[in-house]
Length: 431
Image (cartoon, rainbow, N blue to C red; front, top):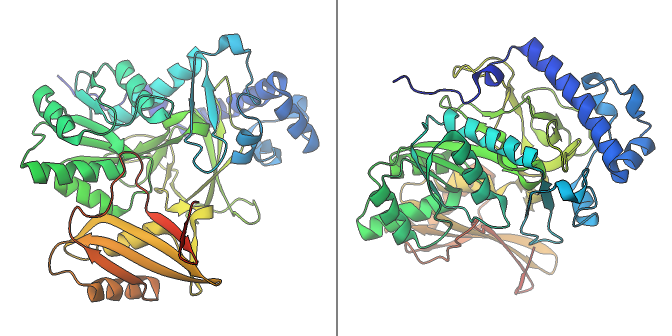
């Protein structure tokens, strides 16, 4: 039997002209929909001088005002909802760890759209219907577990809905049920590798890992590929766009993340000026939803840093543009001793060193207004602090302080890994 390569071949391989016409029509429709459905959008458009009845589609995209995370927080819980509450079927939300949580409501059609996008991601990974899919993100308020679930059901997979934690049991279930596809946050894939080594166990049928929710360096991907013996995929989506996988994922060519262009418009802008950047230049990603009903985003500033890699047909056959994996967030940039860098760059540098393990802490220590950087990292015997300082000096341009810890001694989290910690005058600071 021939392997399935596309979940929706007509849409995934649509010609550029046809895709452009579809997006143009859908953009006009979503602008009319949000303006009619909610005063927040109507007032924003009016203030920006946008006449919805005269809006021409893609050629007028730049005239639309930006949205940001603060809009979601200010309108919490459902102040930007564009349908009657009786039409809602489900909701998910962000953690709200840095303020009021972001809430995303769904109509039944929104859930179908989410499932469609995720099913495309499963097919793009090489997974087949009836493969065994083990879901390790939580199946609760956060969107990760349910997004994986909705898509796997639509694709016809056999689901093992574990949720996070109890890693020994996760490995046993994978072995007992023949798990072939594993979904999770990046750091949990590393945790599974650690426990398998401790337990001298294996997941013999596993062939595909789909990971997201955290920045994902090439070095970390290689650790997962080699450690689990699988093909590793970087999936992308956020609460504001409707959840995991809604924006897209990389394909087997691993040359960038395909964005589902029939469902979303993406732009890359200069974070300072808000002006568009040319393809290939890194900036802030802006997203517009084309097919969501309850709460479509219109020119939403994600805060994620990326660049457009290609608009050409990919080796995998898909015609949807590709962006680079997210390198960091606009507000995550660290400035130490006059050097600007992102946490992902530290990870990339650390994992160049043989024997360094993928569990580390970046500590920003501020004393009387002066910031210093301290790195704690787990490593095998033989790795010294000097080796780490030398590598970081070479890559970052200065030598942070740091300590080397034995394997397994730094703390772990069951959800997203916390990598960056702040201290001010000797006291821990939450950010």
